[in-house]
Image (cartoon, rainbow, N blue to C red; front, side, top):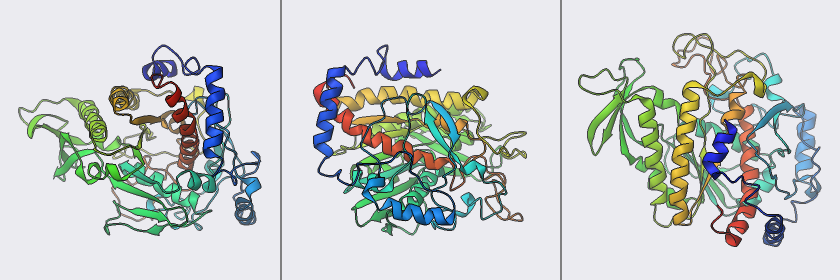
Length: 437
């Protein structure tokens, strides 16, 4: 399947064929001169050094992280970051539920008694290269003076909370939210003039709950598939990076509107309304979101499509007693992307390819932040029943959708930092060969 995805994104020529050796030399030379004024604290990283999860090691980490010699180099990983294996990492995690206040209760697995901790001690190893552990100082230098928005459902918020915890080794942010609504938070890092925000938009497009019950008793929603959710779309021009995600809310009952008229639904059981399936709504929603970004006046930033992350319910659906009780990752040959997760993933990739062509015409950058395969292999990283008190009355009693913090989702920051480092190389290469993107 990976070869199909690569061809879908790049055509028949592989990325390696697109970057001649002479071009690579020029690109790296340009990158070196571009980043050297900011990079004095970024050289000399010892790739074997990373913190331990014990309290004494955490203190060592704090001391070590402030040393220039311990920070990652500006070397760039030239391989497919998103195909690989989870390998043991006894030095993880890099924060705890007692050292980070940004963890929401329903992801605070250790607080609510999760008995095992081995799920914390893994890192992602791409095939053919190494992926450095996230370094908060380097990240904050790269994003100095910039803004980042997480646009999508609670998985995006889950990712931002993880990043706050990881960045806490360098600095805690200041709450500069424009509202008291926890679904729309903004955090600023004063020393770096970096701001990140979350825009909760479960369907990406304009939507509203039409009935709290519906056929599945989990709500039926009206989706206006040709109208982006203005709560985020109106803010796009204010951000340098957009990280877009969405998926799990499209499994609920929905009625689809286009041009303000009903065109169909997904499991709505309404008379004379055709069932177009959730895939119809999913495709149209991402198409509309991409168009909204491309057509935003004065937007010059980078859009990252963070791909669909599968849930791991076993022995039943989420509302039928399904649970996730595994305690270690799958190997790549033990699990395969299939069914609904594969369909969602392919829809995203297909719509991304179309949107990227249009974005290129306006000089905009669209990138794939492909977490799907890595997270498919982590059935052990969800809260399950350890996201609430045992007697709590909650809708999602066994949570196999979100991710424990600390936990596997911390690796998304490893990915993001490496992708941001790569942007320097890609920008230089695009200036030299503008038609090879």
